[in-house]
Image (tube, rainbow, N blue to C red):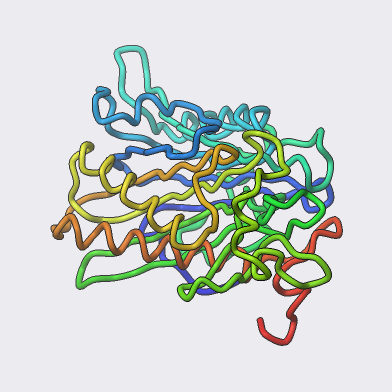
Length: 318
């Protein structure tokens, strides 16, 4: 649990399997939500990502899936589609409405049961439980099996999770929801490590900064940070794409190293529109909200399956 974040008609729901170490998060979008995305990680796992390009026809989406279970977890989107179909939400065609539900996965198999992944029925339940005033953070939903600091080897990892943060500028608001499952360490504004590769509570990256230059010990494509920006700024799809690209700077400011050949980082940008703001001002809001949401993800995470968390290593400081 953490700060309350008002999603302004974006409803967020979670399914969590703490015993097996996986889960999913669903975002149910208000009518007319425009969306785009930008992947900077070289190993993303996605669904319906291509249509989020500014050069594709469809602008509106109806739901979004963030999930664990690697590629297997993408099937959970069927549960969101079923829920939206039953509620008559979707892209209108001559033969009925088709829900548009992009999605992305994290590789959470090293935490818990490596055969576990969210199913359509789990995502459907998360849709039914989704709320617009959601303050759940940490080891929940798609962040249930997330971990960070795997650049030195899986045995040194710490718990990642889901973080949320919001920033307001007059009548424009930005919400960032991040699923943090990075190969790198999470750092604060001063560059000090908050969570990452550690041995007996001491951060390996703090001992010698050159240690990051060594080849990571993890497998290719086993790490990902998924960020979802929700806002009410009036944006065309091309500008949503630009904001998604700029927002990756928030990942870079909070994770060291970021965007490696072992990461599949993606930023989704969603807007209900209606409010005008300078594009650069909005980008900076998104960057800062993302930086804060990443920090919140590890700060509020709790340990599962013997993976240490910030809370378990420093219980007096959290």
